[in-house]
Length: 97
Ligand SMILES: Cc1cc2nc3c(=O)[nH]c(=O)nc-3n(C[C@H](O)[C@H](O)[C@H](O)COP(=O)(O)O)c2cc1C
Image (tube, rainbow, N blue to C red; front, side, top):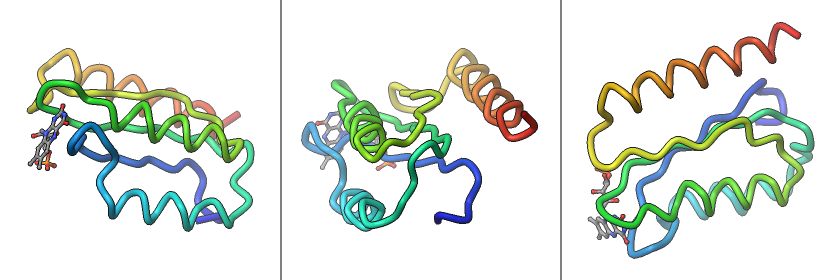
């Protein structure tokens, strides 16, 4: 993971929280030096959708550069898909810079 360029993490919201498997990954990431690394967070949800913002906060606390957070109420619609494309382009631009 320290050798990756950008890091994208996706998770649904379960019981107002980040699913346990993703929490495990986040706790392992805390042992790595990921400061300044660009990242994006995404996730579908059913009604409240807390998990992506909670993940973004965790990444920021590790010093990561959270470029964007995308949330989709259930299946992504055209607007959300466009947001995903734009965020992908933004990440690619940062990799070129
Ligand atoms: C056990 C369980 C708990 C859930 N809790 C929440 C919740 O607290 N807030 C929310 O917005 N959606 C909740 N959902 C809905 C999921 O976030 C939503 O269905 C999501 O799109 C599931 O993605 P997945 O198919 O990748 O699991 C819950 C779903 C399940 C199965």
